[in-house]
Length: 361
Ligand code: ATP
Image (cartoon, rainbow, N blue to C red; front, side, top):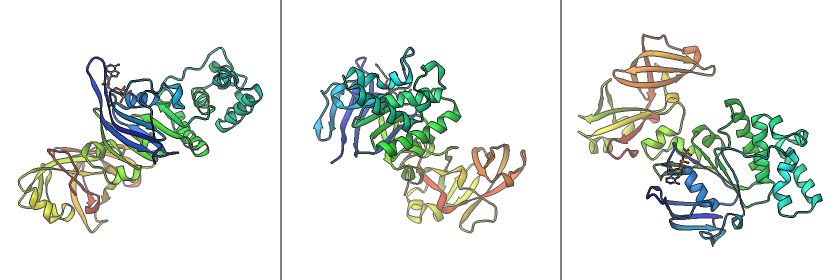
């Protein structure tokens, strides 16, 4: 049986705004789940309903098989780390970590053991006497995480916990949180709008948009098997390229020319979409240099701008009106303001119904 079950969960705010629609999800004990999606898609609202900080308007929420809709936040055995990690500024790191346990009346000796163990996991042992203002952003964040994990709770909720950190600290904390999860094995739900965080940390990702779940799956499933254009465009960096066109006389006709669609779309789908608008998708990193692949489409673009990033170069190009981003080995960086030919392996092409935006298989 799943540890957390969300069945048909809806949230309608008092002003009538329907923020979450029919949210269904089963979370197993020990899973690291990431809710990801653009600002305003309902991630925090869903998390707050799980925490008991927000009423569930409709639907059922179960913890370990027991309906928990009416349980208060404290009864739910859930710990939460927020965007702004409010530490007590006048207390030392030790006291910040110990605070919750002290309130619960836990024995001093037990508290000391727990604080030292938690500090060790988080690399805070040398900072226990410091006040929060004498810590870096990353260290403060670790204290905030420590305050949550020191209580042995069943579920650990995190709402954009890394958003106040700089890019470098975010990368470090990302792997630290993954490491902490491996050690504590606490069921975790983590909210972010950053697809890289989702891809690198999650066992399973829930992609949301406008209050609706778009897809639930492992990072691999979402990357290789997106169900629609939204997921395909949201997961992956730079995002997937989309080229609009239509099937005419069995070919995919777009502003940049035409290609034999059946090799990647299949004869049956080509027939089905004859005369209809359709979208071709391919990832920037899926392209190959001209002449390197047998089963591939050859295309030519005008290179507008190249960005050398070190391990690769992002090429911004114009495919006769369609803007595309291509990722190439920096040793083969093409010239700017010049034509450039590349290939897309048939197996790397995705097709989407233009109207429904669903993937065509
Ligand atoms: P972000 O990444 O910006 O935090 P989010 O995906 O977490 O976004 P939510 O905070 O869950 O989004 O908000 C979802 C929607 O509900 C938004 O459109 C928001 O404006 C709206 N909303 C949030 N709180 C309330 C409220 N108390 N009353 C009315 N609408 C609200």
